[in-house]
Image (cartoon, rainbow, N blue to C red):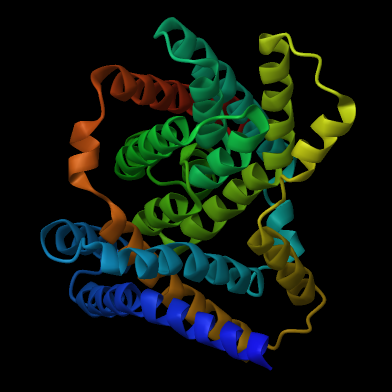
Length: 346
């Protein structure tokens, strides 16, 4: 009874810590949805990010809000993706086809090689290069967090890598809609491939895709999920490279334990479960429409939180070499995507 009471008290304390930031995120999300009715071309997603950045940097960037922002950014976006699965059938996933899978695998491979090579030329440590490779190739902060314990990276390396990967993603998030408009006139498959194949975090993919159209946002998310599924493979390879470069005789048992810690994010599994349920027509059309609506609301609130968490001072504070590193990787990703899309989706 005592332990149960303590557990309930702890949960109440956690909720109280989350509430301030969550309330702000919901408020900005709702305001963005309202403003989007008058500025439909800009869209609620774009408004939410910019409004969040404005409010977070000038008024509500205090520590008391951060846990709520993090909850809204990660958890609500995860729920949004799971609900999205309830509106998509397996036939939609099959639209990506072999070309989609080949595109993602080649794009990720080039990103990893480029991150390792450029980082070496700029004089960065092996650990930092591996973190930048996983973060840019797979899924941003989550990939870095999964890779760090496998290669024994310290908190400083992890922190700088997470900041730089997110900074790169923020810039690309706004650049990609412009590039895809110039090159493809926002053609759905090509725009979705570039958006989902390049951007670092799921939130950035959703935000950038939503700036173009609803179909682009949904299809780009599928491309992104393919990358997330390959997280285990990428972390395993980077772990092997790290051990080889250190010339250490690591016991196989120890290595297996470390790699075993890497798990596919729960929302990817949830997405596929919902997708299968939708495919076998167990979700009525009316319920699917509700899922879509709730998913969109959660998405806008999550994007507001992403904007609220962007610290402009952190963007400016990063050193020149680190900034160049991120910029070079971003340029390689764009160039590679353009070439691959030309050959695979024409």
